[in-house]
Length: 212
Image (cartoon, rainbow, N blue to C red; front, side, top):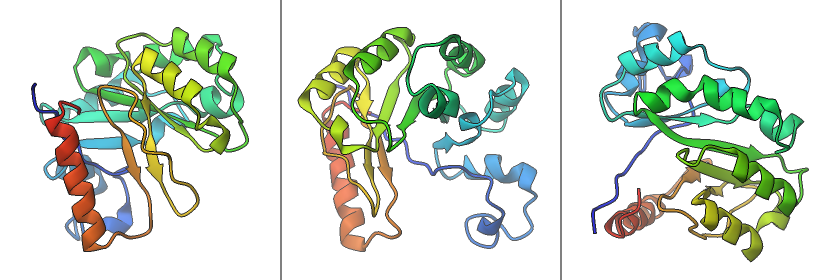
């Protein structure tokens, strides 16, 4: 079995207060992405949660990063928060807008963050999963505990969509793997050396099992 690939990144990269730490003190903001991509090999993009990216923007991102670097895109808030997973014409519009990254082989998973006030709705989930192109990797972060059930996990497995294994001070997702890749969102304020070692060992175990 082939070893899975490890992608490691952060939620966003264009933070001015990272100067003097992650970024050199005098680095211009226009150089943030290229510097970031010299250290990490993926980024979770918040931009697409609020607007559709122009193709020129996507091409610029690709030009500023090396081969093999991938972009995880947050699904637009209209899909998750306004339409609440209902299948509308905007679903197709969103995936057409981000398709240039797929064509350039730079598209990582698309992350759907389901709002906490949306409880389990199996029909809504079934219809949405069926509406997304099959070659798109989906990672779904449920933030209402009612979704943590075997029926939902089976639907995700059938679509090869990943249950996003998110952890924060508020909620931790059950460690259920539903796809051929695993998506972690490690969002606690801090991690001890021991906790980071456990994360490393878990990533190593998953890679050895052939999962990205």
